[in-house]
Length: 186
Image 1 (cartoon, rainbow, N blue to C red):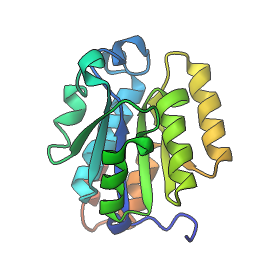
Image 2 (tube, rainbow, N blue to C red; image 1 turned 90 degrees about the horizontal axis):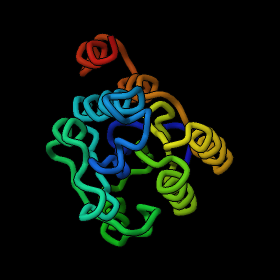
Image 3 (tube, rainbow, N blue to C red; image 1 turned 120 degrees about the vertical axis):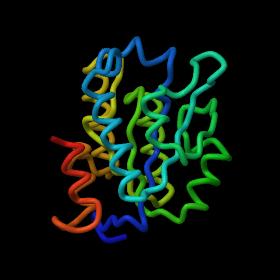
């Protein structure tokens, strides 16, 4: 696969485990923290661009549902429950990824050093190119997030902030969703 040739037609957004009972323990997510804001921007932007969204929920009976402000901006997202740390280990999620025919999987969510890292490792191993939203991942301990991001890069994942991802997909000013995207990041 050519390095970083993502387009609207070959990309999918995977939001990992941003759930009601889990998020308050993570400072970058709690009370609309910076990672939560970046995730929301990314989800809104992907909707504007027509990028399909898949949302995973780790054991929702215990950890609750996906945060409302994330889910409301992705009304057509497929929401799938899981118990594996790697979303790719879940048969339903693996099937949804295969059905999407995406080559590039944008990844955001929590916790960076557990479920996000495991998912990115498995995506890379299965031939997908993981594109990690560097400002849209978080862990309870910020050092764990930094370490996980370094590990994901070593695995071959690309990492950049939400704004970079969205404008890379948009590719050109003045056409398509450009003005709407510009409004999202101002």
